[in-house]
Image (cartoon, rainbow, N blue to C red):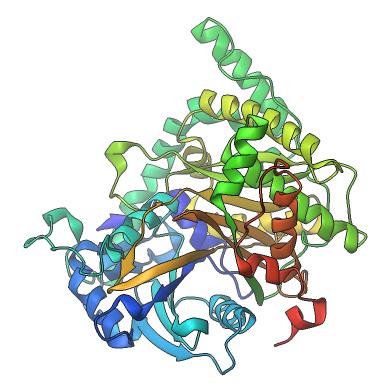
Length: 508
């Protein structure tokens, strides 16, 4: 059996009746590239069935250890039922982006069934221009951004004809089809209990000197002093120069989307032209990611001003980064770090906002390179498995009630710049959908594809009733940075979103 890591288990531990731990995407497909010009549920079902040997997480089912004595395991589900996981629905006419977004928000508000493999796929008919959406929903305990891209690489093709599957999948791709009983799992838990002390001992040398860089621990009293004392002691024992850069104190201000989340979500999506983003990058000597962060800050500034909620200090975004090595490719699970990045919503001038973002990111990247790759993984080892779920929920509940750990998530995932196909239908856009938690009720995830940046924004339904406005303001924030000789060419859906008023966006 394959055991979850402490970081994998944390995404399970965060779940409650109000917050879920799954992620996904809404792939908009053009069926006109298929021989019959249609895309049906059976086509997606058959494509997944054909490729299941290359998608081992699609068959993994969670197996808990009694009394929470150790982290859970994945087993290969002996009763796997593909029909349960692949579903379809249709939007009522006339087709609008808001109707699609509302269905996605409702589906994502529902938790996954832990008695089955933790994923679902929805084929959604009734989109404009005859398009069909395929919405994926898979638990974060199974994948991170990189392993999610590996799964999409199996589901997507370079041509409408698809690709030839290997005759025999690698032997290591799956898990044995055996469901161990409760007694066996209890024995595993008892035998595994001593491993907790060993995991803590292994994690101590790398974690303690860097403990204040783990945001969920840095809020606790005495942690910064402990971390800096440990770092000085480690330098004395090893000799030489300090290994990490001087720390910066980023304190997230409280905003209206940093409270306790409800069980319900809002979703909005749109796109920006990659050529325009690169024009800004070249004109100002920065990176694409700098532009994305600065544009997000500009849109959020507009929202905060309109709601009389603009803090004097910059917001602090959680920016996930992959620490997966080449040797860890294809292993699934989570290999990520969490950067704390300032979003300069307190800066009015868009060019100055971009300049500060670029300078801040240079420091953040240097600090990230100086830290152990497995810092977040090691830090979570300190919580005993039996209290893991409760401790994780308490941490985020305190963030919602007192001081936020982060204000929001901003994630930028680079993607392919050539046409892709799913079951023969051409991929038009791929809008990501991600997680929000107590204390962090807003998530902006971006995925680039074939000349555009696809934005997916998830917010708490009660905290942000007019989330569609952010889509329009993203486009306007980009235009403010464009060189004067560049003609704005943001996709139509991003421009049209600016015209939506609060009442339209809130309608259900």
